[in-house]
Image (cartoon, rainbow, N blue to C red):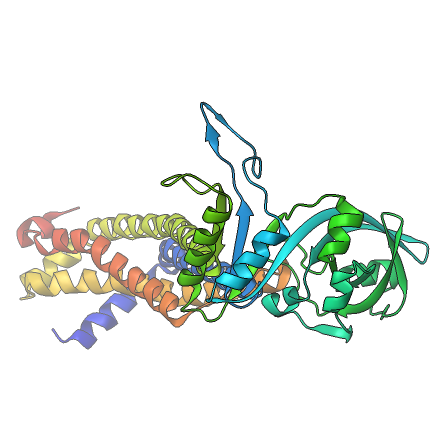
Length: 406
């Protein structure tokens, strides 16, 4: 029998039981739609993380005071070593793979301006911080090296801080703000960066000279962390190694001792984020794949019922000359038709669900051609796999027994 004839017979058989055929397809539709939507969410989350990491700056390397284990107790972070500005100066001087470096001092502070209050993060750093983060200003200008050395009470603020203290869309350049009751002059407003991959608002920040924050806000002589930028992406491992060697020497750790500080490159952060995103995508896709598996079991069940209902028809066809291969192909084509039509509908539904999630929930989703192809191919394979046994059962019926079946 020609393949076109098999398709015609299969389609006519499915059309006789429209509701049953649709309900059988429903499992495949839901499974394919779930696979596409979950893959879109996973890919979107991965791209959002990578974009956020890229927004941290160019070839960024972070150095944090670490913790050391003494006996059974593990000391708190920074308890075993503390950085000073002299350490930053040494790294700047000796590390040839470093382009920029700045110490960082962090604090939470209450801001007051124009009758408004706002609590936010205050970050002290050298002017190079903006170059490391690749963070331009929308208005005004950054503080200078001389203002850094003189511990001037000046700052630049993020868009969120400006909106909450001075009104949405305002330009407070030249105005004053009190930080923990100390008056600071606002030099400019940072360009908006939005949320990072952890959901933190990067624009909710005040950036001031390191010496000012260290001496007048925190009141100590220590460096919370360092932030550096390598001369190129390829030089990041070398830059990290140079920083490690210099700090080991300056902190006078014994030979073979583990560093009591942490050096993290942007590449390592991106790799960790991609690993998390990949695991999330696999998890979501596996859960969605279970729905497709359930749909395949539904196809097998209905095809077995169909073989039982049409036993006399099968016997008649075998009696007039149809071969077992023809019967096998007929029922296999019916199973494939259910899964393929369900797969097509599921593809459309999955793309629609992804679009709804992107619009209604504000999630970052990305539907790729590869995910659509994989989901559709998997639905076709489901029809082939779960339709094989019922089709084989039909092909192996004895014609005489089939004609006698009531």
